Length: 300
Image (cartoon, rainbow, N blue to C red; front, side, top):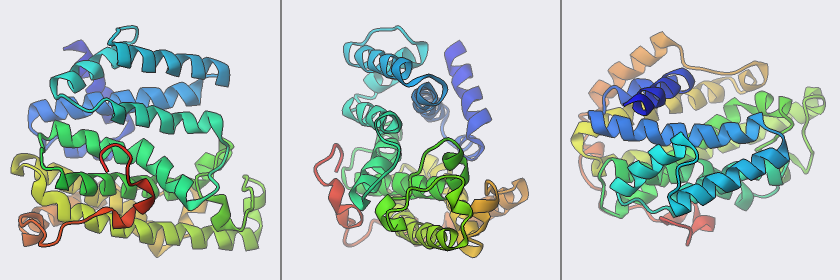
């Protein structure tokens, strides 16, 4: 019980949108989701808070524990128990760790393929793991779950451009910004800023397509959990919509959705919940047209 409370507190502190959405989930699903978030958060913090050599050693131990079902780290043991109970494909968690490790192996993303692979590993697989937690056994749902993860990660990348540059990282594909190796100094150049904002808008326009696919997949989610996922998707998407309205905002500081705006989206979701789109399965289901370069990876 103590670890479950810790998981919830980590979710509440670091992911306010997801915590709000989790309040509408069935209790066991909410516990499982907080276990997943804690696992993802911990492995990400390992990279952010430790020297490279030490971070690599810890992550190698995390992977070893997860594969061999050891209990060196409580957050690994807890998530392992959750994934075993749900008969989850363990390759998803390993893909997540590969994505986090990207920050140790690379200081930039070069190509569109790199970009999609990174987004899949750090967020797309989270959508796939949530399918197990939501007790979804229709494989048609997996494409849509991946798309929701991709859309959210693209939003996250565009929101955190400056914060990431302060850490010496860039997740905008270098080939998209004319092979300029961005840093917190040269991004102050007006011509470079203009190009960066063009790329940000382009990424968010792509994210909109992934969110639209996620909407089509809502019908696969059990009705008791559907509203919660809808809220998480719409409120997180709202961050990107704010940046699309004023792209330069992502360079001026972290863009966020206020409590009043979240309440407004909550009301919107209450009405949207009745829309036929999220109750009827699409006549022609989504394939991997939005992420062709990812075909063949676990879940796709």
